[in-house]
Amino acid sequence: MKAPRPARRDLLRLGAAAPLLLAACATLPRPGPPPRVFRLTPKTTFPPDLPRVDWTVAVSEPLAERALDTDRIALLRDGTEIAYFANVVWSDRVPALVQILLVQSFLASGAVTAGTDRDPLRPDYLLRSVLTAFQVRQARDGGRTAVVSLTATLLRMPRRRVVASERFRAAFPVEERRFEAVVTAFDEALGKVLKRVVLWTLHVGENDRRRGTA
Image (tube, rainbow, N blue to C red; front, side, top):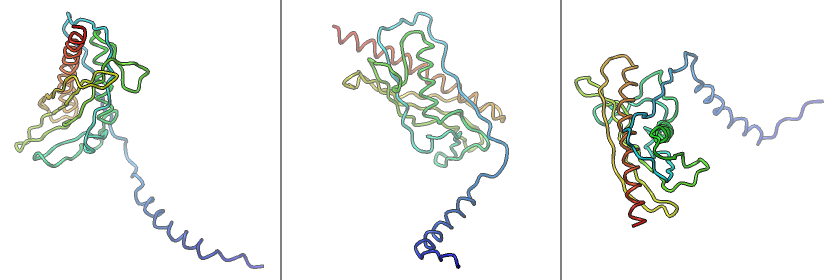
């Protein structure tokens, strides 16, 4: 007894699936060493007389364009072309990395209770931000500089009233050709931004609280 012939619709399904299977095989990653993973550090040094406030702040993940919303380490050439360093990545997507480093910097200041906007925290303020630069900029002479730029907005909860907005930017030269120098430059530039954001948030929040009780 002959086996039943497959129906025409089943043959059509198989035929449509074949190119997808071939495409999947063609895009399989090539074997090779895994990329090196680098992390950045929170800001931990603040003025010793920084007063502790009696309110809390939640930090949202910064918004960022697709070119920066990645764990790859960006290199900007001629002001317009974005490339990425090969075989190296950050320890997380850049916006997620900046969010947790902001929270850790707030906590390291010892001045305020802070967390992410996903934590079980009932914040008095919400810090939102837009990450507009997080890359190495390469000049025409070959010089490289790590640039970090963040626009922060502080909102009063629960009505999400905008209290203030400010742009923070810092740059630090890449002083050696070794890739570790790139990471050091990023750590320095980001550290300056983190510290300024923490101090600004504390100042703006305290002024807002005083106005609210006056």
